[in-house]
Length: 589
Ligand SMILES: Cc1ncc(C[n+]2csc(CCOP(=O)(O)OP(=O)(O)O)c2C)c(N)n1
Ligand code: SF4
Ligand code: SF4
Ligand code: SF4
Image (cartoon, rainbow, N blue to C red):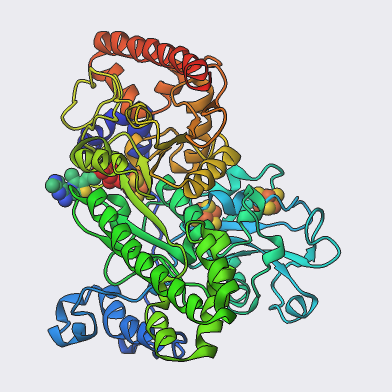
């Protein structure tokens, strides 16, 4: 066994091998004997859990499909079980019914220490730690295990109570939230100790109302918005899901997502465990996965389809307002804001109300398509294997089209979902499949290819390094009336970061501090188009590389080559930063 462990783990470092050997030794000696109680021989199955509540179609799907699948009994499902889904559509929000309870330890919140910054929630990949602002009545009815305090500062002070709700049965135990807390108000404790928090979380989700006055587009305010990606099956600590969750908090109620095949299609839509969900009005991201190689085109199709319907609706709205002067103002307000998401919300609601009141044939014809009236936020999600390599031709075609779509690339610098093949986003010296002796050529600059069009919004972000810059880039990209490309640095299981994925967000900061990854925004609509958001490299580059076994393993396998490639990697990073500083002058004069 030890030999096999050495073979499997030497690439991750001798310390990992030693830990495995120790575990093998302990497995042989440190066991205890427990007698199985005799009455277990007559054990019967537990009664089915309390009746599921929720939308009837969703409960039916969960009961008939998800439950058997979760028990590894999906093979026994008859074809007839899928009759409601013959067109491939599944209900949103099924993941909330799973309650996998897989975390060994979960965070425990200490209200007295908390400064209510919401950083924990901002980074959580699984949306299992959430801040809530409560009215006095909501606070009075919360289960007893909750800790409820006054809102300490800023918006809501003197108005609301505050709590942090944690779902122990959905949490993945990554500890990323603990690392993001500036005042050590969170500690990891055994899951069983925190089970009383589950009813608190469930109460907050079901009963606490949306506090619009607490919500904005800052790190703190964004976390009072409902995440519409929750409890996915991504790895504990995954950066991809933290980014996607954040995007849904900002635009989820009017989002369309086209998703490339890759990790994001697997954690995003494993039939029938849909982790994308809806708000209390039934609005949530409409999500679809086509192919690895045509995702951008597929997303463009989603945009064009609804855009054409909206163009036709605009003609109908103009005509009805011309015929009936009482509709002139509502129609104008809707037409004037058609291209702007947030601004179009109230005029859309007013237009629908006015048309419902009017109720004639022309009004009914518009109302038949009322779901299209509001401005949609169209997103195209995928990994670097999709964006830099296999779907690149399509991505280029789509950004060149000048249409108002938003592309988010989860850049793990490797094909993560298929076990870590090198992509054109992989970097010099990185060991991956198809680059067993370390990749020789530098990472492609996808961002600069996009910038040269001049009309594409482009940003590079790393949420753990600069959370405010990330949210700024996402909101600017969405507001931009044209194509946008955001590339998010996404540390991944595949990187074998020292200490594991609990350090995911911290690793982003290290990457930016040493200049391995750069933060910037290119906004064609801004007066100063190019903004370099990261500082000059502060040193520690080689230490950064050695912190990840995707690099450090090369020093064990090919030490001389490692030396050369890692130096080259650092030199290229320095050149890249100097080059970026020149773009400030080039694009802003
Ligand atoms: C044309 C095609 N080639 C290969 C595959 C197999 N495949 C599925 S996901 C994937 C890797 C995706 O990598 P990436 O785009 O980097 O996303 P990540 O998994 O890293 O999020 C591959 C190769 C496929 N589905 N289609
Ligand atoms: S431990 Fe991980 S999954 Fe659990 S609440 Fe914290 S960040 Fe979320
Ligand atoms: S990160 Fe810490 S201080 Fe900030 S809200 Fe969470 S628990 Fe409170
Ligand atoms: S392999 Fe990487 S990208 Fe995929 S779910 Fe795991 S951490 Fe996330």
